[in-house]
Image (cartoon, rainbow, N blue to C red; front, top):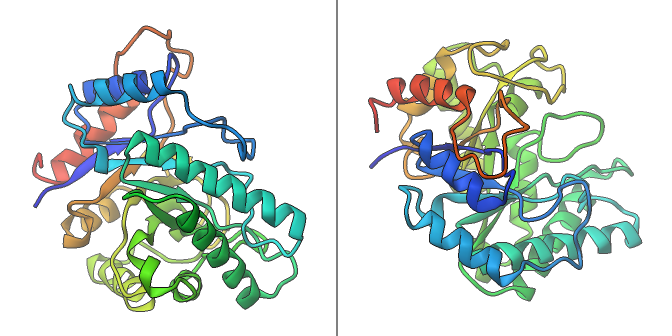
Length: 298
C-alpha cells in the first residue's frame, strides 16, 4: 500500500498542463476543475479533444486516472429548499459527473451546500436526492463524494453525523458509487482539534467511518488561517497556519490515508504561469518534500 499525494495545480494552458505540472512536482494524484467553478455549468459539456489531450498526458505520468479528483462548482447548493435553485444545482452536479466520467477520473468531490431553512434533516435528504439523480443520469465508475465543510452559516456536512445522514438516504444499489472525503482546514474550522495527538486524529477518522460505514475516499491537506472552530475556510501552506505540521504526519501514519488521493489545496506561488510552462510550482515542491518525508517517500 502507498500514499498518492498530489495537488490542485494551476491549469493555465488546459487541464493537461495541470497534469504535467503535478507530475513534474513528483505527484501521484491530481485535482482539477472541468469548468469554471463560479458557474453552475449545468449545460456545459467537455470537448473530445480536451479529453484525449488530458488522458494522453496523464498516461505519461505516475498519476493514475483513479487518483484524479474533479472539484465541482462552488456555487452548487444541493441543500437549498428553493426548488428552482435546487434543480439547477442538481443538474449542475449531474453535468459535472458526466464531464468527469467522460474523462474517466476516479471521483468528483463537492460541497453539499447550506440548509437555508434550518431544517438539517430535510437538507440531508435534498443533498442525497441530488446525488441519486446524478448517479442515475450518468453510468460509470466515477464516484460522487461529499466533502466535509468548514461550518460557516448553515452549511451542511460539518460533522460525522451530518455526512452520515446524507449518505444514509442513498439507495443500496447506488451506495458504492458515492461516499465522502475530509478536508483538514474544514475539520479544524468546524471545531475538531487535529493538534491534540495521533490518537485523537485516529478517533476522529473512526467517528466518520462509524457514521458513514466507510473510510474517506480522499483527503484535502490544508493548513488553516482561521482559529479552531472559527468556521473560516482559508487555506494556508502546511506549517504556516494554525494546525501546524505534526497532524499531517499523524494522518499519513493512519492506514486510511493510503491508496486514496491526498490533495493539497494550498496556495500557489505562480498563478500567472505561462500556458506552455509545465514547471512545478515552488510551493507544491516544498509541500511534497514535507509530506513525502512523513510518508517515507511512498
